[in-house]
Amino acid sequence: MLRKFLYDQKWKLSTASVGRRCTDFGSQISLQRYVDGYKKYSTIFALSSGYGKCGVAIIRVSGPNASVALQKMTKITNLKPRKAVLQKIQDPETTEVLDKGLCLWFPEPNSFTGEDSVEFHVHGGPAVVTSILNALSKLHFQPASAGEFTKRAFLNGKLDLTEAEGIGDLIEAETEKQRKQASYQTSGSLRKLYDSWRITLLNCLASLEAYIDFSEEHSLESNILENSKTQLQKLSIDMQQHLSDGRKGEILRTGVRVALLGEPNVGKSSLLNLLSKKSAAIVTPFPGTTRDIIELTINICGYPIILADTAGIRNNPENEIEVESIRRAKECTKKADLVICMINAKKSFKSSFKEFLEHYKNFLGIKTEKVLVIVNKVDLLEKEEMKKWEKQNIVTLSCKTQQGLEQFINKLTQCLKEICGDPSEENPVISHARYRSHLLLAIDYLQAYLKKTEIQNYDIAISLQDIRSAARELGKITGSISSEDILNIIFKKFCVGK
Image 1: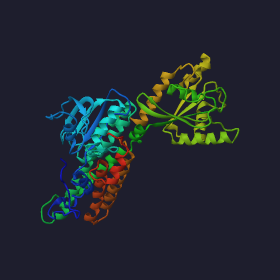
Image 2: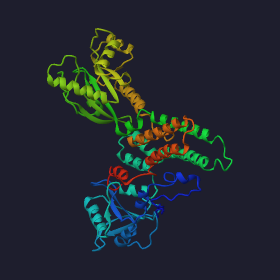
Image 3: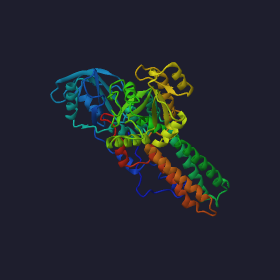
Image 4: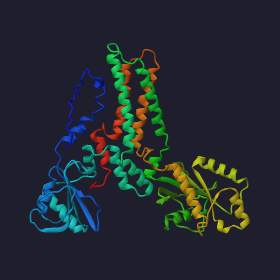
């Protein structure tokens, strides 16, 4: 069962305890969470596998009366935990046989939600699934809302918020790198890191509380203040390094925004079609075919990219439509994480190639480090012309013959790896903007405390509130301190049945 850990709203704290000012953010989770967690939930049910025709569908039941589903809908008399039993499943009122499938029993607390749970593995036809869901509703169970199973797992202490959100990311993952990052997060990589930082804050706070309460009555170490300050300075540096990751985890989770940029008729739409392996954009030999931005999500060596084909850019647009197309192309490149600048291999430069690129980037307002330059249409070149580009150490490509495609993909993958990193359990990265927001606030509070310690004869007792606030922000990331509003925002993003 859930731990009964309800606190008096006035927070009656021990005046003889070192942790008397730490309690509200140390061992406590918000009062609201414990009230919600301890109350008797209704029993819920939902289809946990995907909708549509399939070989097997999984229907999950969770709550205090979950065992009733087995008692009323099957002839199982002896419930054995985690043992699959093949049984006829019947309507609880008419006793009509609805299907024959596997039935599993998971008694609390050894289930995903931490509650008594039942699973029916049945044939995946829509009629079968609907009949069993209707039968469960006759037992006065409630249909689960989006994310309710995972929310109950969180409230029962089976998961923290980072692990719960990792499950959501795992469900949404479309590429191998996204899967790896989400998998590490569900295993607790971020929780362990943030909990270790929070423990450091609590230990420092406990030491400083002891110094305030007992320094005059007992022989406490005289270097408590300096040691705590050193630990907090190191913690602040560690947190800042964690934040200076270039948003790698967030970009990998949502997808790398890549813009195709170049002059008219340079082959941007052809490259879009080549990478997406379908005719997504119209390709003609006439300049200005692409007017608006076309976006596609594709997988490049495990990295998700949102590839945008933009209108051709030139200094002298012919009409208002082209002016607007160029403006949109510029806006798209400013928001992009990577810009692929395409050049026609037959183009002759009045100045040097290097000067041309600098002018091009300045004209568009693009940062040099986020530009990958490729030369297209090399199938039109003679050998001597080809050598000229090879000396420039530029990626060459022919969208028509696919010459140089493998080298281009390898170079693009290197760029994506620099932008997204390579997920690992040892070095977890920030995957949600919510985490970054709380971490920034925590650093601000730490910096405020450290700044106060530079003042002679500063009030230690008052300044400790900054450490409490920093610990509270870390607690909000993992959910050890939360509110119902935050939980509703997080879990409503989940699919029904998870």
